[in-house]
Each structure stands twice: as structure tokens, then as C-alpha cells.
Image (tube, rainbow, N blue to C red; front, side, top):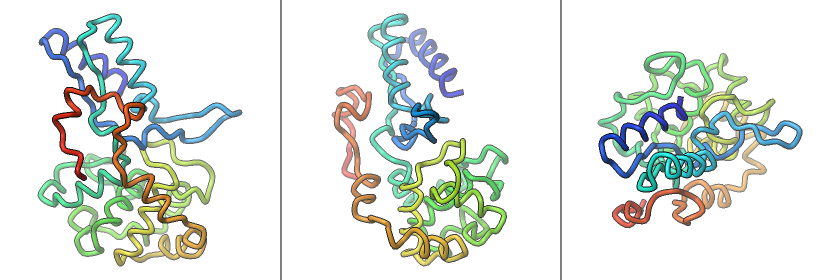
Length: 227
């Protein structure tokens, strides 16, 4: 869907006389789900920086050299984005990230991942305005959480962050007062070997180096990145 939308948006932008075609694809999408015989397998390839560069080149060579295709959120990992959205409670009822339900099914890997992202920055009371259940204590999600943390199999073939990003969110959630059997597993099997400072340095920063994104300088210079 992302690749089809990219083509549609770019054609429409050209017809309407616009120069910039932007998406909201995060840096987390650059990480492969797994490797198969040494080849990276990325469920989110059409949201990755590699795809972004290829599409930008394709559009400039075949539609117009004036067209710029880029993601405005590419400098940020999902957990960093969640830390910003968590401050905007008035928007909590206006978004979802579940492929099963029109809101939140509360029983899939995407719900589990997004719940953990927001639990990292919202306490157990405040998160109820987004999720009515404590997903950390829901047995039906055990396999999903174990896959998300890297303790079982491979990461779900969904639009979710990598295991290190998930584990950092669990650390923040634990410090934030969240509880449940998932937090208990985290404390026992993951926390003793977790390099928190290194993970914070990786996932909570803003990547503005030119090699990390395709945002045109004219756009980049007008934005505030004091996040």
C-alpha cells in the first residue's frame, strides 16, 4: 500500500504543481524483520530509507526533476515519536495502529507494541485513555510480546519496531510503574543484560545527518528539531 500511495501522491503532486511529496515513515522501518540465508527481509521495505531513495530517483528521472519524495519522520524512531505524541492527550482518540479493528483489537502484535510505546511515557492511569486494558497482563498476548522482545522466534511481520526498541520501551514502562507478567519476564530475562544508556543514545536521538534521510534542505532548515 505504501508503494502504491507513493506513486499516486507523486503523480497528483505533479499534476497540481507541487514540489514536495512527504510521508510519515519512521526510522524504525529501516530495520529488517529477519534474515534469510543472509538476505535481509523487511516487512516494512516500502517505508524504508532504501525504498525512499529509489522512489525519489525514479520520480525525478521519469516524472519531474523538481519533485522531492521523502518522509518527514525519518529522523525519528517510533519510540521517540511516541514520547512526543504522549504529550498530546487531546489527540489520543483520533489515531490507531491496528490491522484487525477500526480502533484497537487489544489482541495483536501491533496493539502490544504500541501499548508498550505509550506505557513508556504514560503511567498506568493515564494510558487508560488510550487502552482500556493492561496488555502486559493479558495471557493471549504472551507469544506476541515474546516475539517483539526477541525472546521467541522472529519479530512479527507487522509494522513494529525492533527488539531493542521494544525492550527499551519495557524498561521505561517498568520505571513508569507498569506491571504484569510481561514486565515480570522482562525483569527476569532481559533487564540483567540490557544496556540502557546505549539504547537511549540510539533510539531517543534525532538523526539529521544527510545519509539518514531524504528531507530537502529547504524543508529541513525551516523545521525545529529541538525535541
